[in-house]
Image (tube, one colour):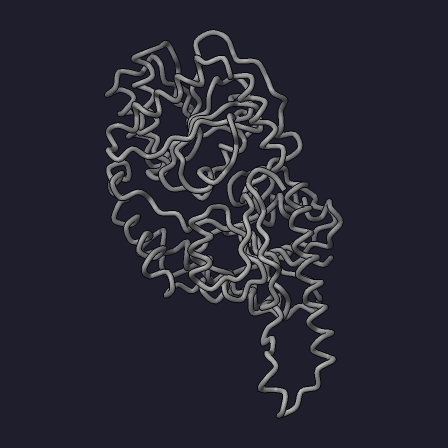
Length: 439
């Protein structure tokens, strides 16, 4: 099929959104689709250097945002909206015909995609964004809490004022990665909402089940040092664990909370037990998964969490907060999921108890086996095959509706009685949902 892929960020050898865009493009091409990718022109050099044979990349320029003088966050949003307008204009001017449009990056609820205006079905997502931060955990957000409060309002009572409403209402299928985003999408008028993880694993991202490491156990935390990812909470939980057993902690990642993370380690007397690596290459992160004893995920607001999937794919059992997409994922014994404590001061101790259980019980190898088994269902080839089934379903429905419309003559008598499809992207599927525990 001819697929028009919308990936604002798309770059090989990077994680997060740029990596997701790249993996969608390559996985869909490898499965046999004719893929055209709309992406930002800033990714031209690394993409061309990777020699992406068989993929038609269209590099879209966009005007610079004047908002960079006022707010970096507002600038990012404005740049993205400007790029969307330029991408739509490019697609409308193109002579190329496509079967479907699939928007994959940004994978967020709030900013939508202008490509619903094309006369072809739009698959939107996977997206997150419906999740909000727990208000009683405000102290972990520090100075970012006012901005987080505004975001919560835009996701809750003010959501219908958001520009994403038109995208959701006109998408043939909306793919979501957590139940909060499903609820928000249905509130906006989505008729066909299905589950799919935003992330995937390359074939070499999977390892086999392994034996529990010997020696002093290592707790591994990886991610950007941002308030919503709660690295301070992770350190507090490790401090509670360290009071009851020998252990060490490795933190991989960098960000605006770097100084606060170092200060927290010093304040809690953990300088001999916690190693802060800063940003590290993905290959090194994989080796850290392979040598660690347990993975710790503490994000207080996250659509899902790429590191969680990566860790399980390496056979590393996890402890994670039961929030966002992780709360919805049926991973069995691969991870212990911790419900938020009513009193925030109780949560570090509860996380520490879960870490202690994983490190001391006799089920470590069973957890490792379950981790790999679950993660194996979320490789990029499997995700591309799942997307293909959606494409086929939607285009088949479109063809059927077109044939039915051709059989019904339009006249003043029957025109008022016969519902019309005003836009082909309004043709939606059956509403079946992908399961988080497999396809």
